[in-house]
Length: 84
Image (cartoon, rainbow, N blue to C red; front, side, top):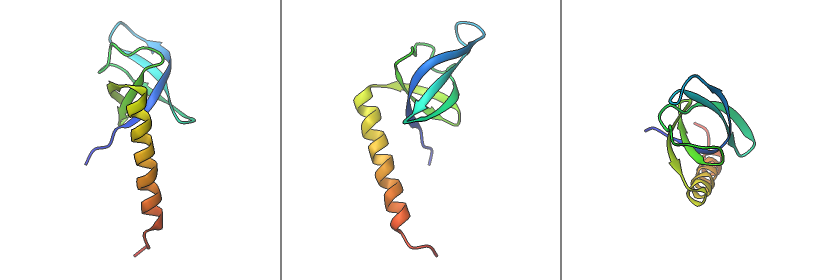
């Protein structure tokens, strides 16, 4: 199973040409550098889905928040399961 995490594109930190860009993405307080080559239309302020260091899609803010909430709930459930 693959998992993409939503984050907000805060700024473009590097740009080689129109296609190859690197941006700083905020994942609720954790900031990471992300490759934006697969989403050339992404602009600062957009929410992007990130998988293995690359933004693979753009989603709206409401969907990003719902996804993060669901991921948090899954994490809480995993913490409650007993260790084997």
